Image (tube, rainbow, N blue to C red):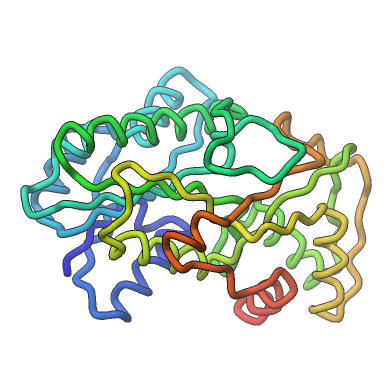
Length: 283
């Protein structure tokens, strides 16, 4: 099996490429080093040249400081050219979406939850999911959208919460906390990769199906710091209110993973304490 992984140089993409190769796949990663995915012609040419059986669409832009950055982020996150670029042999696209495509909710989010994106990034991801579903349906390509919740693990960007917390454990630094309660559903990167593979190989999924990928357990920032201190055996100082937080942070943000369990046979296998311990050991 030959796979293209867009965003193959990113956090989740690197883990997916490693897993695919370990499983014997022929993998073509398409990250910033290989092609500018904000250039539709270049992206389409790279996908055609790779001639894949499966495309894993993981590329994700976040820059938004200027009009040019926002335009590039829209193109990368929506990839409207992707389905038309697929060779005839390619019948499956697995897209890694985001929980930020959903509206805020005080109850666990199912796939039927309203799309009310939380911020610019969430809006572009939601648009990309809808465009993929529409284009794939017209061409007869099997599309699966996996809306991942808060992914963490080794190799994440150093400015993300888990790397910041573990760096504070290592150096004796201080973790700035947001002024308001923030809870998230933290899901281990290896479990997300497993969901991607199962989605690619499960041929009886409904066209355009959306599946939430999370644990069903939400953890506050303070609780995560406490868990990290316990598994590392290091004290971790915090400064409440020192971080401005994000406008989409909420006291309730958790996945209902029932559909992924039913349709993929997927369940999360690594809880937060074990995942933090593994990340600490590899950092």
